[in-house]
Image (cartoon, rainbow, N blue to C red):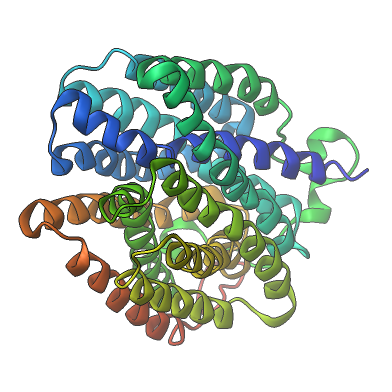
Length: 398
């Protein structure tokens, strides 16, 4: 068996753990507000800090991965995740939430996403979209399974003990898997590294000077702004209109479940038909879903929203690491994609905080949802304008 598929499977499970429990924050959200007496803006702020911090770390994590490989970076990731979730069980003040979830859990995710996607991109020059789609399906699998699982834990063990259980699962499962990763095929002794090199070779400074990089940066920020606003506030929104908490958790988990289909199907199709068209389709579906969410009052309406939104956002996620490897090459992919990954941190920091602030101010999420719809259609338009950068020759000139 080609060892690249071991890389994909390991990365998929690690993503399931890291992002499944990350998106469980929306399940803990109401518990934290009610038990600790915090308004939604304060509680949203912890997640916003997490999003900003973990994306800032994408650049140093990518550099470390390029230099030392994924086993070191992912070991640091798992240890930080375990520590952060364990300490969440003792929080009593907002600064603890911001430190333990925002910084420690954020560090864990920050040292996870770029190393895994960059490593997979190196192993699959021809089936890159397919491999990344399967790997990133782990985020959807984790959301589908672990978000409702978090609700089960809270219902049976209270939220503090639930965080301790989560910490144990992350360490026990994640740490051994992190050591299966290999940066280059040559490390396995099965394939020479030269056989897997990309034909395009942008250096870091060259890549970040292109218009293509900044177009990708903007639409990536918009995507994650909308996504994180939804993932943090959807359960609260559903409960506010009379949906049972367990059903609301299932609705949230369904977004991840449907996103699996988007990641794998669109990741595979993008290898054949190009990436740009699927950016447009994905953002269009997200915009339509947000408009439907404004009118949602019954469970079936929320389920339709979850299906459209999940497929749309899932379609876009594997396209970013794939297109960055296609256009800028893999030699410095960790650093280049790490810089690009700052964008979701900016968007992800704004989204939850914006949703919480608008609700505290207006008593409704309607303005936040309408803003998300407008931004989705803007990103769809921007995605149609992206053009590949001019390729550099061996001397690095345009």
